[in-house]
Image 1 (tube, rainbow, N blue to C red):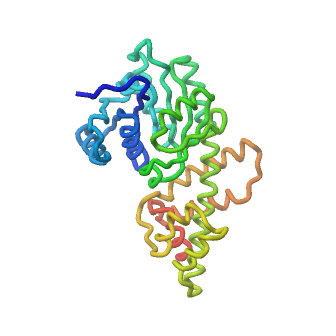
Image 2 (cartoon, rainbow, N blue to C red; image 1 turned 135 degrees about the vertical axis):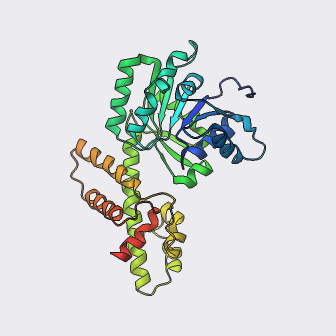
Image 3 (cartoon, one colour; image 1 turned 90 degrees about the horizontal axis):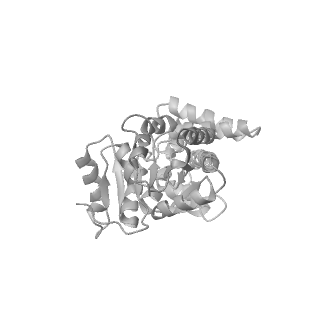
Amino acid sequence: MNSPVQKNTPLVGVIGLGAMGRPMARLLAEGHGVVTVTSSRPEDQVLTDLRSELKDGTNPENIRWASNAAQLASECDEVLLMLPDLPQISETLEGAQGLLAGLEQRSETAPPLLLLIGSTCSAPGVRKLAEDLTARFGERINVVDAPVSGGEDGAKAGTLSILLGGSPALCERASEALAPCGTSVRLGELGSGQVAKACNQLVVSATIFALGEASVLAERSGLDLEAMWDLLGHGYASSRLLDSRKDRLVSGDDSPSGAIKYMRKDLHGANEIAEATDTNVMLLPQLRAAIEEVIDAGLGDRDISVTKRFIADR
């Protein structure tokens, strides 16, 4: 039996229980006292896995199960989508058991359903999706884009940067719903979060290639790589990315974690923004070509620190 939910508690549902969505669902259960999930995986397996990760003292019943997306939409006010891209989001919305079918089952006193698009995807695509939903359902459903930065470590620790795009009122609602997962900031109208994430990924991809290349140069010159990065980490070369990947760069461990292949999509989104803003970019084409070369070399599933091995093997 589900435990009672306190008044004004955000009723958040999560779809997409992968490397990012799973720890975020756990944090929502711990922070709000309730979260609802659904998955193509068996209910028992999903709930057992999620509940085993709850911090001590958290009621396992805080994590609830919906048999499909329609049920989840009928029971939740905010739905966080942590899916790969817009095609998967569209699949989740449509159909007899899709999120949109759940609109008909919502209470008349419930607020409009708010979709929180945590996926990294196209800013124009997010705007088009919102326009289509408004044309079909009016004010019964709203959209905020909410991509995140901070990686799996940030998702597990609740220290994500959450990049919001949408109206002030909707972003305030999104911020309250996602508060257990990190710090949310509204950056502008719908699509702004995706633009910010594209800018973030441009910087991250440039940095990780620079770190990999510099590591190879230093190592082949006979330097103590760990000592070098410890020292440079106190100067202008310091970064969160160096902090999180230093050990991997030193040891050469690029076992799968944050797969570098996903940067292909992220940088494609950045290129869309460059074209839309008539920006004659210089670095972005080189980074896109480099990512393609990494993937063609069969290294796409490796951690982003694979740039060191990639440069060494060229």
